[in-house]
Image (tube, rainbow, N blue to C red; front, top):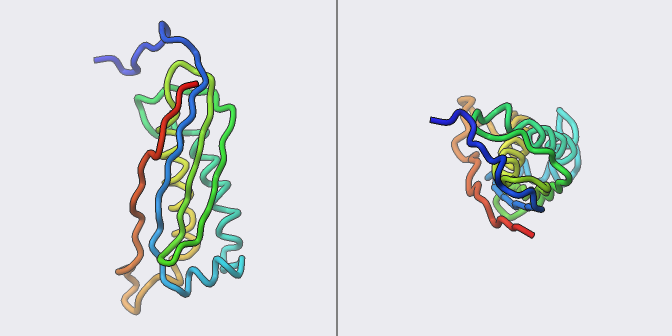
Length: 144
């Protein structure tokens, strides 16, 4: 079994991947995001940075992923009725896709948001019965 699949014979072409995910939250947390501040700071600002860090470090987190020179990324946030949606796009000119980088960006962005909101989300027993990270998926992959 190859530890890392040999892609040296594949052509380097422009590739893009877009992924998304949703953090289900209480109305109180959504209101705090809209206000721009929690005890830990601006949720969207910090979570965007966490997303970017994850995009750049994907090959360190997932053993079989190649270290891809990322040439562009975008992190978008949408406050929805039931929570916070993160959508990440990643671009590279390389011989393998960037969908894992987009998925890692979404996952880490949502984890950071949850970390910043968990004090609001806890119930009286210290649990998170209604808080959930869900719907993480690749929306599209493009080869140019």
